[in-house]
Amino acid sequence: MKLFRFLRMILLAFVLIVGVAAVAIGFLANRTLKAAVESAGTKALNVGVRVDDVDLSVRKGKISLENLTIDNPPGYQHDKLLELNRIDVLLDAKSLLEDVVNITHITLDSGNVVIEQRGVSGNNLQDIIEKLPEEDPEPTGKKLHIDILEVTNAEVKVKLLPIPGKLDTLSFKLAPIKLTDLGGENGFDSVALTRVVLLAIAGKIAEQGAGVLPDEMLGSLVSELSKLEALPAALIKMLGIGVDFGTGAGKGIGEGVLKGAEDIGKGISEGMKAILGQKKKED
Image 1 (spheres, helix red, strand yellow):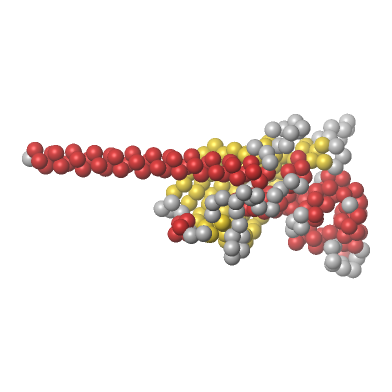
Image 2: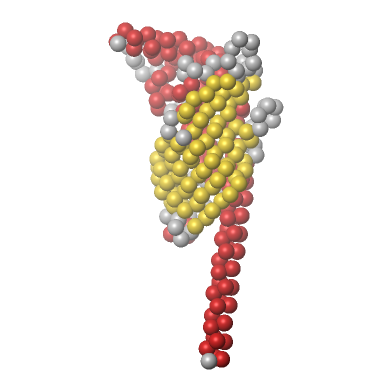
């Protein structure tokens, strides 16, 4: 009996030690991943990036991040460019042992983007995207391939210059974004992934901002996206670049793209009026 009790105590102690070790390893892994996310984001965007909580489950092949924030560049009144409530990442756990980690699905959910205008055409989003590196200049860690990445339930607020008698804040809901096969066969690093996601958000904002945002702000943003070859297909079609709509609507916008930020805004405004006018005639 004494031997049995002794063996049981040994077994319980062993289970306790294994349990504590597992918790400790998980805690350290979460802290390491949290630091890695913040470091990669800060390196990619040149502004502070923070995340409140990270939960990694290798067995389930899942990573969850809560309350990720991206700071504004210096010189803006508001502290944050983007606040994201939750990120869920599903991955192939076996690929963690390979050179390229295969992520099957990423969902960025419930975000708030605050665009702050500075000067006639400048804004915080443009300031960040124009300095985005294409990849990590000091590559470390594994490459990534993402099957599907989605941005859902995001809200956009635009803080305009204070002008008496005019609205100083515009708001709209960002349409869902879905990107597929990111990284290609060879994968890319986390800095490149951050770049792709932010440019996709900026492109969707520009696409929905036609007729909503001030012409100068929209034109400047479109110009920057064009330089980075990051104009979304729907916006390219709207701008009429290389496309003949046969109505003159696209032509006015496309010419604006080629002439620079000031003319882009004018071209977009005129083009949108032409498109809306055409729709009215068709109706």
